[in-house]
Length: 342
Image: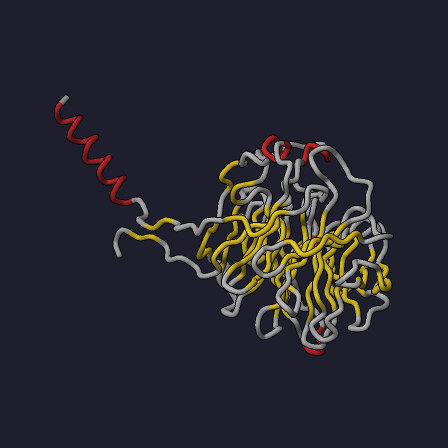
């Protein structure tokens, strides 16, 4: 019996000392700004040339689908609410938005109608329809190349559209099975961004939990798409930093996953820390989109109760308890990975 105990102890010690010593050191997510009480949950986010932060509303609070036009909420760079704008004539369901890098036009994706809208950034009025792709699409996020062409992810058709810098008809830049999904949530191509050199476009696939790399060939033609990495749980919004690290909002695990250009995880940031007494999220809950702003990365908390669409996730009941919607912030400087051997 004694020999058996000694053997078990030796085996246990071997297992303990053979475990990896490294662990994630997570920077916390705190509140950047709170949307007005009449706003629905935020989805898209962008920063204006003057540093103001623009947020679009998706129109699906836990109480049920909104029928009112979508809104754009504007904060200053410190999270102070500046204005709440109704986008009259738009559907309730706005997703990606961004300022065009050469014209500074505010472009907003109307998910409900399949249109790209040019919107007045001071009033929210629709100036014109930048491109009308069609209601059968699932327009989600925007990116721009050096020539000012606009690239738009289509979550339902598994493709990336391209629109000329001045607007007009959209053409299919790439359609590939790696950009479609049969998974849940039922969104394929989602967040997208070019690397620093513009030699590749990276696209998050939400339902497949993946990031796809699309090389840019001669003349801006898309080369063959290939999955860079899997296992980002609900890969949603995607941005790329100055070192070509890829930051992805993982909406099903309430965190931001940062991977290097090879697809290796180098950081996991933020977490869900409950709901405060005002009905607002502490930390992250169904993070959807993200953007760099000064020393921080800002993240929209979509807090989507997927039971509205006929299926439940582990956060559905938490999302149903949220009554005030927020944007969170995380320090953009990556923490070191904790290692007991350091």
